[in-house]
Amino acid sequence: MAKYDITAFMEFIKENTGVKNMTVFAHSMGTQQMFYNMITNKTYFQENVNLFIATGPFSKASELSVSNFLLFKSFVVL
Image (cartoon, rainbow, N blue to C red; front, top):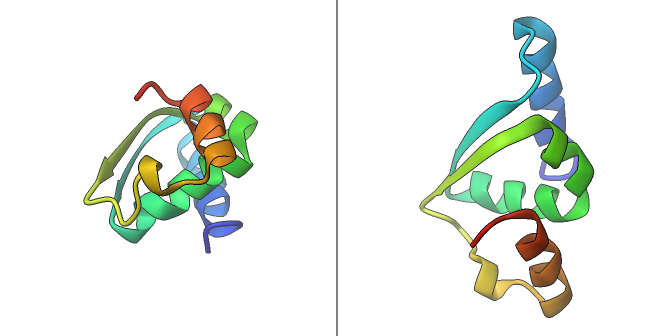
């Protein structure tokens, strides 16, 4: 789900609403999927997400490996 579904959902929303970027509000496992996507597909999320709100995160930045944390930190202001 994390690898393909989030971007597919976002593309569906963009195609059907005409928005260019969006705010993502995620809870629990959705936050983990977004963390994964922001690390592995940084450019896409910089171009398409203007705000990410993580509520009840299933994982947190301190649980990421050092290299992934540095990538995550470069994308988001902590």
